[in-house]
Amino acid sequence: MLNLSNRTANAVRSLQRLAAGMATVAPRIGDTKVPMSLLEKGAYINYQRIEDNVAIVRDRLNRPLTLSEKILYGHLDDPHGQDIERGTSYLKLRPDRVACQDATAQMALLQFMSAGMDTAAVPTTVHCDHLIEAQVGGVKDLARAIDINKEVYDFLATATAKYGLGFWKPGSGIIHQIILENYAFPGGLMIGTDSHTPNAGGLGMIACGVGGADAVDVMADIPWELKCPKVIGVNLTGKISGWTTPKGKYVILKVAGILTVKGGTGAIVEYKGSGVESLSCTGMATICNMGAEIGATTSMFPFNNRMVDYLNATKRQDIANYAKQFAYNLKADENAEYDQVIDINLSELEPHINGPFTPDLATPLSQFASEVKKNGWPEELKVGLIGSCTNSSYEDMSRSASIAKEAAAHGLEAKSKFTITPGSEQVRATIERDGQIAAFEDIGGMYANSIITSYNRNFTGRNDANPHPRFVAPPTLLPL
Image (tube, rainbow, N blue to C red; front, top):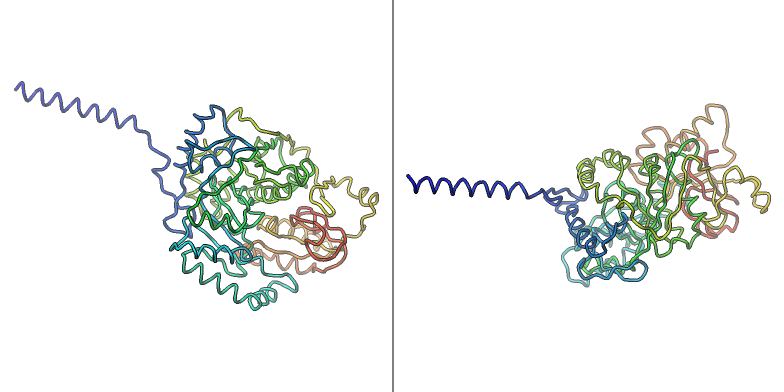
């Protein structure tokens, strides 16, 4: 009986110790497996790496971290030994994915072939959008591009198929809109062979434009090297209202006027503050996209409810829910230090038009007429271009179409013609379904001297060879 009692007591104590041990083991964020994209199998969001790396770096630096530092340092190849000093050290990083547009993908794929690998080390996509020239109209321009670039498109299609890479054929849409709709996710690190890759920052991602050689390195499982960026904090307070719209382009036009085309060089622009929630997700993407015009390494926003709405709308509820669980690392630490801070009250933000010839010449709309006369700019704006990778979402198109329809209902005709470029085939099909293309076609479009555009660049010769002034404004102003 004694021996039996002892054995029983020992068994009870063992069970108690096991239960106590089990009780102290907290679930890890990495225990949940969520795919990066609905279009790729076997590639999962790696929040556990960020969690582990940030803990190591936080212990080393012994200070609060900004959001961009968390995401960037969370992707360090060697968090224990990496030198970390803003603006000085060079970081070796492990991006989550790579994106290439058709003009730069050709050489990148040729170089990757020499690596002797069966597939890329990280998910990689190729998007055929840059070789399509806008001349007559969507259908004819696409047919012409397919004919002229057939050899290029055939190479890209077969090479991506051989190496298991994603391929978006001509006519699928603009690379950055497709990435936002399908591949961007909060907390990710992506490099892309296009300067407006930061568009994905609208979904809380660090996304940087690089050259083809950098893309090949990452595809070949070599760490990507980046000079440790400084961090510019843009504190948004108040709430977007009226003609400033939740799309947010007025925000970046204002920031561009403050920082100029060189003020963001070597830095990540990190938006924060209570005003963030009044911006739409595609509005945040527009702001991050145009961060390239101020020279920024990239731009980004903290995870918020508007991102959740967009992820849900694009059928990525699992990513939205996973990001909610990781939200504590998808925002800056309290009292995090920035190299520069800009304060913008959205409630007081007036619509701006930037230009001509440079995107940092910011003029409030109320002063634009006087500036036109003072500088001798053409007083008649003859053409509006709505779209590009910056303002080509459904939200952009629907707002512009709404104004066009309202004008038509009152018997008004547009004095300035304009053209539109939806950001993806999904956007095009949706606005066609909703009757918005018809509203635009009723107004028409033409090429002439002075142009105002919702595109991101207005440098001389950027839109065409015409030397006359080009201005930058949000899509909602252009139908006016």
